[in-house]
Amino acid sequence: MLTLIVGGFFGDEGKGKISAYVSLMKQYNYAARTGAINAGHTVVFHGKKFKLRTIPAAFVNEKTKLLIPPGALIRLDVFFNEVKELGVENRVCLDYNTGIIEEIHVNREKQDSILASIGSTFQGVGAAMSDRVLRRLKLARDFSELARYLCDVPLLINNALDLGEKVLIEGTQGTFLSLYHGTYPYVTSRDTTASALLSEVGIGPKRVDEVIVVFKAYVTRVGEGPLEGELSRDEAVKRGWVEMGTVTGRPRRVAPFNFELAKRSIMLNSATQVAITKLDALFPEAKGVKTWSNLPSHVKKWIEDVESYIKTPVTLIGTGEEVDEIIDRTLDLGVEL
Ligand code: GTP
Ligand code: IMP
Ligand code: MG
Image (tube, rainbow, N blue to C red; front, side, top):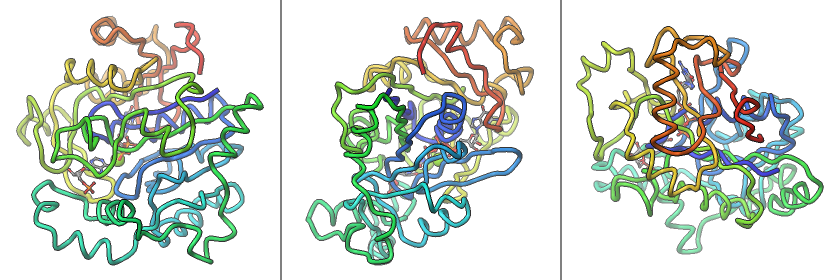
């Protein structure tokens, strides 16, 4: 079984929390995190907050093996710190061809006025990607300190799928930050859609079973670029929608849920199901609710309106930060996960 988790808007939709829940409750054997260290996934598990930049959020399931694929980019210090903090030495591996970001990449970005104008995170990711395209980037296999962690991620995953095991692929950022499908030039340095996750990991499209597109109950965006219906800071505060970026600490810009963007995202990713996070921020009465029947009828109606507009079932609904603060409708809706 192969499941992809993809961001539906501009990143920070809560993919980390959804991935953690799915790996734990649906017992996934492997999880791979795509993308790079500019993306931070936040997971709150048993009251403790983790901010992850290299390791899959699926780490909360101690049985899940954690993979960093060839298309991903990491920095050595960030990787070693996370491995240590999470205590996952014995179940993490990275592909021989994973890209390595170095100080020179960060320094090069800091001097780039175009990156400043798009509100880059300045983590060196775009500079490293461009070196990779020019075939001068160092890869994981070039660093002796990584030797004990190296493995063949595509082979591992394809073999696992042959054996009927469950594999989860975590996306980073969101569909409209995609280099190809986003609001160019206000985008990141990679394609962030479902197809790109497959190529980053090394899996063919025919192996995919489920594509979960994750939307937040409102839209957020960090950095520059268009944001339809953007609210003023005061209005965001009034609605309780204020958030800070995981990596940069910058305040996130906010706008109400965008039905048109959601529809396009469903198309670009061929979503089979949808997760909606932060329902509790839109409807405080939904906080901590774990069953569909306990939601007030006007809240259910909002979800049903989304479903009928995007013609895709909403199977997972986030009602709080904790991994288990979720309404799981997969059984009721007859959807596999
Ligand atoms: P990127 O890969 O950077 O796009 O990140 P992400 O999609 O994993 O999202 P991120 O963790 O950066 O931001 C989501 C924020 O919402 C985090 O602070 C989560 O803890 C929080 N969050 C996720 N789901 C819920 C939810 O259902 N309710 C509440 N209140 N918070 C949530
Ligand atoms: P860069 O990819 O770091 O150069 O940033 C380019 C744009 O993508 C900026 O607008 C960033 O704010 C945005 N961006 C990059 N990574 C993330 C993320 O993980 N979440 C949200 N926005 C991001
Ligand atoms: Mg984030």
